[in-house]
Image (cartoon, rainbow, N blue to C red):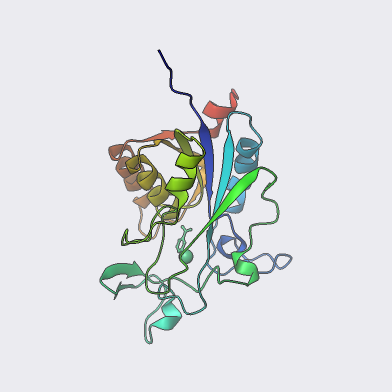
Length: 223
Ligand code: VGL
Ligand code: ZN
């Protein structure tokens, strides 16, 4: 009889300067600021150092300067307006995480010592990519699923910036790809464009077989 070997990956989504509130000491911050994003880094680092995980992966939002998700590419439009981008509904964002700029760099206090792989996404200017697995049209994979399978990963734990966007889409695609999937809620930031969006997101995740856990469940803290 054989038993399946559990192998756990921590997938850290888009913990980059461009999503952090403006900090004059850190170039690239303040592009698309998410208020609660710096506060997740301590939990993400603690998880990343835990032997509970066999593998640590970072995703990197990595846009060309003229990416179609930037409101500046749509004359007369503002941030948070919704447009049709080549057949897909697209929320318009401030320009952020552009290739070869400080905004796309990982946040300096993020512990990257165990990172085995970086998966870049959002590189095609015609389509956004919230998920670390697929573009928003699910036309082109990033290679993350193949990489995790090649490493023997069975269980995926998702953290990062920012629900209900990139970590949530990544977790849903992970579950759909066949990994037992968890979202570590206190290690994810939240950007609510409408009130209640965070709660709606948690319901949607559970509906897609993503288990919601907290970092203390994993690290065995009593707090
Ligand atoms: C993200 C909006 C645009 C994210 C990325 O990482 O959640 N959000 N690009
Ligand atoms: Zn982006």
